[in-house]
Image (cartoon, rainbow, N blue to C red; front, side):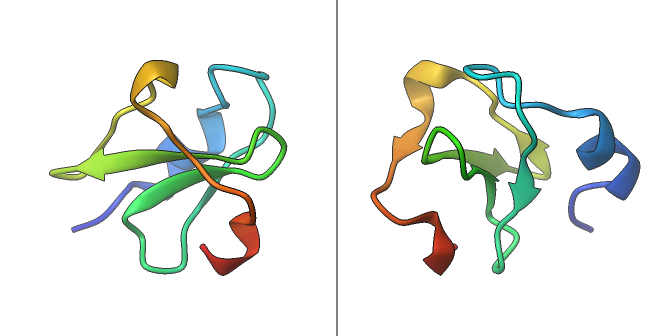
Length: 61
């Protein structure tokens, strides 16, 4: 089913409050500013800073 486009439009990164986007494989919410990935489990984004995955380059997501 995937993430609802309207939900993506209202979500923001919990750390910087900036824009987020959906990863290419639609398994992560990506914050390019913070270089964080928030996992999507069972179509629900887990937007917890402590559970986010830090990455060096978000371009590959």
